[in-house]
Length: 513
View 1: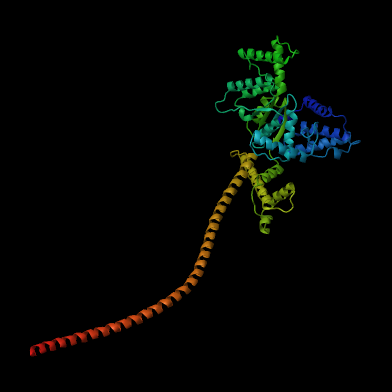
View 2: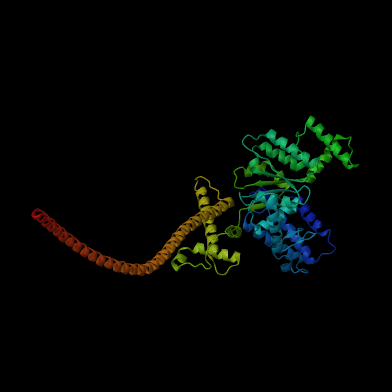
């Protein structure tokens, strides 16, 4: 009790234990002794085990259940077979509430998740072992009237998402308030009135997910505490609101021809209204134990533990961290099939090797690849930072809480950085590949031009020879022509001289005559 407020047990737990067994046994025609003991142990775990905080306490609880079962049922039942873990019960795969294998449940949940992503919420959700157990615990409560839950765990463990998922599977509408800095108690009262009208008059089945961040003052929790305890909030419906509510209840009863309710009695109408509220409304509180107000809220709101089934999410185990990391890194192209470390690296990183060994064991892998090494590095980095934050908080410095949400941020940032670096390298490779392609094309063109040049060089030599022959012929002809020209010029001069002599002689002759 001094450790945690949920460690207070009352006869109500015994009633839940008996009721859980009865509801599972009632539709069955027969049941073996082993099945009965297994059901007995499962319901005991739901009452005692689910609210425990530490792994040591959970292990102690499991051992105590085994011891009690062995002492009382060991004479006629194979206890090892009857209590073989995990103890998982569900009515999703069969029409009755029966023991189910984890593999079959995982296949079913994966199929339902695909539809859930399309219809409701596109949020990546990894189905690992702890998720399956928490989903079954939430389902076990929401299936029953007046089933309310308190989910306590660090931020990012999936309290809200799993509650919405299970509500969707069970056909429940989800109601959440949108509280901001201007949200006040009057607005909260109006939201509560609308909610109660939906479940008490319209007969709508609703799961009200109330996060601790919505409790902006103690008045919020006081109203929720009253709602859990009696199915009503004192003073919520007054005056005209109450008159209109009762009128709507009367019309609703008349439309259904419900003769068991006296419509002329306001008290009878109000009791019928609160009865419908208790039957159709399920409240799920989500709280973070690391919050400074957690203990105060637990002390001031006893109905949180008296009326709610507690499921202590705590934080993710090492197995959960590894499984989540492995799923989220599925699209990383490591490019390697084997992974090995040098001896020097092995000697310096023994703790990392322990995490890697645990990773291989959980993932059932013999030879590690780079993907398993990446998952191991991410988990180890998260663990180191978390230990350092705890050490810093104990030293009196500022408190820093490292939660699974931070681990998811680490994975997302790693994937984002890896994608950016890969895109950058691929872009560089594209540029280099394009440049090399251009060089190869240029080389081929140069080679073709060189071959073409050799062939044309032969033609050029031939043409040059022909041109030389023609040139020589032209030169010889030119020389011949010049010789003839010179001869002609000489003959012209001689002819001119002769003509001159003839002229002179002609003049002489004419003078003599």
